[in-house]
Length: 165
Image (cartoon, rainbow, N blue to C red; front, side, top):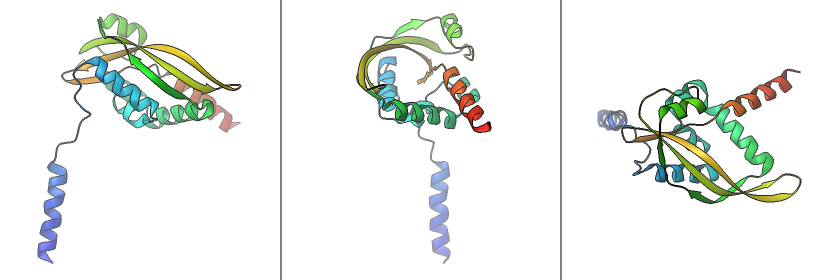
């Protein structure tokens, strides 16, 4: 009985003393962006959210983000393919702040163009070549993504308004 307790305590101590596993270390902004878009296309929304800028996570919850993305993916049967990440370009914080009022000035900032083929259902099955500018920050060896969360908040408000009527 005592040996069993010791073994359990040993494994519990290993669990709590083992450092928390961080997301992969990425060599460059392009590799990180490819990782984000691959997870997004695979509907791994929690992984995408976990790589948001810290300031964004403080004002925008995981559940709201995941629910918003699941709703859109299901509603339009979205599929992202042929994802092509362009070359990163360093940008000044002023450009970040202009696009994301929640951003704080620390780290190195980048923007990249991402092109992809978007398949969706809207009055029939369609596909469209699309592109988006992505903004990132690198702090030490970690990259974080910025995202305009206002559409998701408006969508959540609309859903809440519908439920309250």
